[in-house]
Image 1: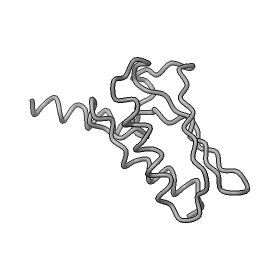
Image 2 (image 1 turned 45 degrees about the vertical axis):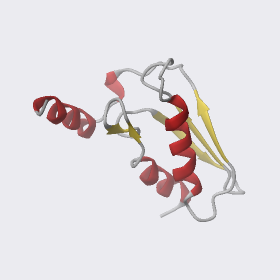
Image 3 (image 1 turned 90 degrees about the horizontal axis):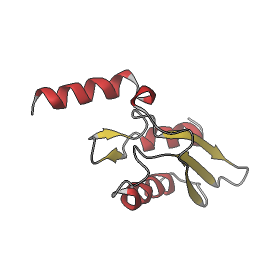
Image 4 (image 1 turned 180 degrees about the vertical axis):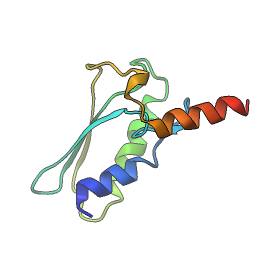
Length: 104
C-alpha cells in the first residue's frame, strides 16, 4: 500500500463528532496530495463552515497523517468551494446515519 492509500485508510478513522461518521465516508475529504518528500496536503471541507469542532477535526487529521511512517510535513487545506452537501456521502455513511436515527 502506498502512502496515499495509507492516508485514505487512516482518515477513515477520523470521526465527525456531530454526525458520528468518518470524514471519508461523509465526503469531506476532497483530495490527498503527497509530494516527492512525502509531505502531505489534505484538501477537505466541513459540513458547515462555522463548524464548532473545526480545530479538533483538523488536529485529528494531522495526527492520523503524521502517524504513518515516513510522512513529512502535513498541511490541512480547508476549503468551502465546492460546498459540502449530503450528496457527497457514500452508501456506508448513509446506512450508518440511518442506523443511528433508528436507535434514537
